[in-house]
Image 1 (spheres, rainbow, N blue to C red):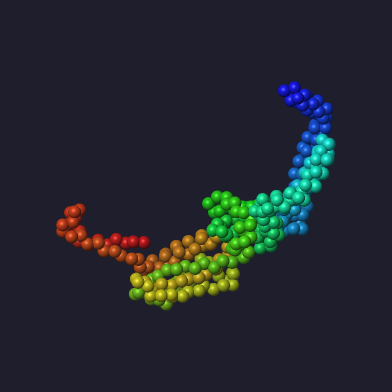
Image 2: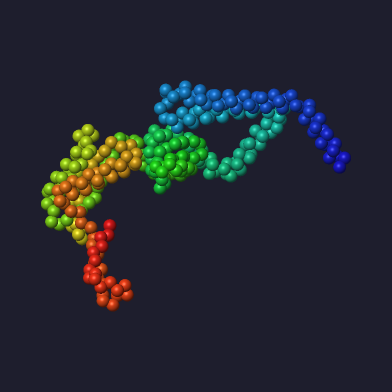
Length: 293
């Protein structure tokens, strides 16, 4: 017990003796922290006019910020006279680096993948992408993960390694997007009239000349209750949400045009027959037709 108390007294005296150094080291750490944040903003704004990719600007500014903070940490350790400890850590890093590298293989892989993704010209913050079963706007690309904001405002965090190893679709690389509408008309309809009416409806609502494209229309098959066709046209769009809106508008306008001209879009019919000894005792109904979507 006496040895423990003696050791505690020694530590207390050492702590009191080093209070000025501890205070200076804390001040250095605080200054380096705020300096790193200032450098982050400064570097980001400085290279903003030279580097167009926001992900690259973020990466460079974060590295500069981390470098400034590490310098402050080094000075703080020097003030606390941890030079020998620091040298020991650096010397042991070569031996332990292999072990740490194996233990953090996944993390290091994500970090390297994050650097690669940051410099990709076909992927940038603000793009609307679809990858690994998720679709949305790219919010952030950092050294560990990739953040997507979906149309329903949910945030999806995906490891960088997963993004790099799997294909992705970037809707923002082009401002033109093709939309396909599938539909069917009754067998008694005038097919030439159906084709002309559909093309006219699409052209009136979506300017194809502006994007130097034409409406495509093809009858595809004789269905069970209808003659089916597809109609393809182009719209100015940079994300999947605008594509859905355009497709919805096209369906509404085609339905209105068909109704106005008396062209029917068939739908399946089901007939139910009730026998006299039915438990529900429904005698007045012989047949009933129920439409199913």
